[in-house]
Image 1 (tube, chains in turn orange, green):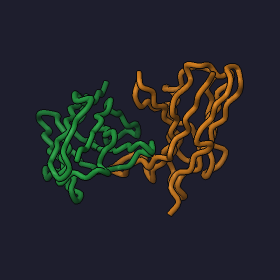
Image 2 (tube, rainbow over the protein chains, first blue to last red):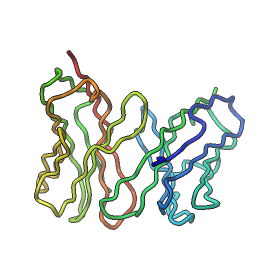
Image 3 (cartoon, rainbow over the protein chains, first blue to last red):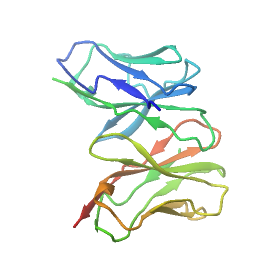
Image 4 (cartoon, rainbow over the protein chains, first blue to last red):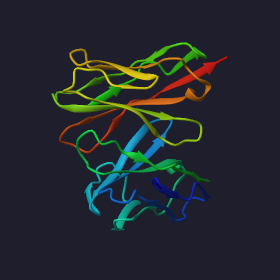
Length: 115
Length: 114
């Protein structure tokens, strides 16, 4: 079975550029989560969706960040304009339900470096 | 606010030995779920084991088991017969029954030596 698929795996770009991270959740999973991992702050939830609808975006750091889920099999996290402090590993995860003991299944992450 | 604390930034274990990673959490909820995730150098987050707070029996998955102490709000992970492939960052995570958000600890880096 295909897991959560993220692209690109690595992204290096200069500050001020627009960055788009992509995620394909596991088929049939109704919940999709975006996390950011840094040494200083660990794993932080940025936003999550249920049935393509954003439910909680309180973790999105600022207006430069936006996330969309146009359909059940695709989501994007966009940063515009990007800044060096956005450098981190960004994970997408999905789960069949948002509650209960069903775990979140993670993608391999995108390592983002903003120069 | 719920918090998850992993007080051991790094641990080391010899191959074939047993090691225990600590995790404590703070919550006012009575019903919740706890998870341990493994993150090897490949960066992928892999579920190791999960525990429902309403279950008194400790979860076990092959060489991995937990010691869940609800009153003490403690959820430690025991790895038996450690293998080189167990070397990774291990994250403890908490989720209330009625919420979707996972709260992670800061992680413990486990080194496995020959």
